[in-house]
Length: 102
Image 1 (cartoon, rainbow, N blue to C red):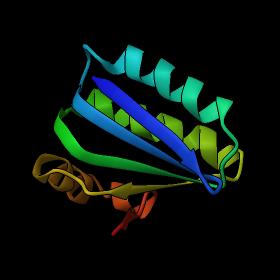
Image 2: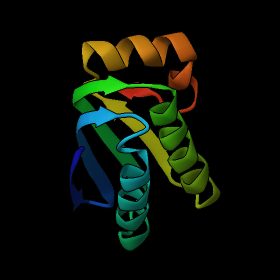
Image 3: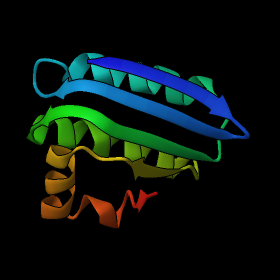
Image 4: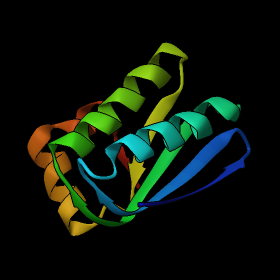
């Protein structure tokens, strides 16, 4: 998993590139927490265009970050989901808590 990010106008843009599963979950959780808590932002936009695979562990990682940011009043949005990510987000109802934006 490769994680790229930038902060622009109080919006944190994060791109996840690779697979988010039991093998990468611990690293991804830790890295996202570091990024999220080290920047000041009103919104977080997670780009999933390069997401090749995500399982239930990966879903748990994203829900965990959502809960932490919700407590801080920061909204999370999903952009450019890959075909695989789109299917998972629709199937699980994750767009209810992390809306898809263009």
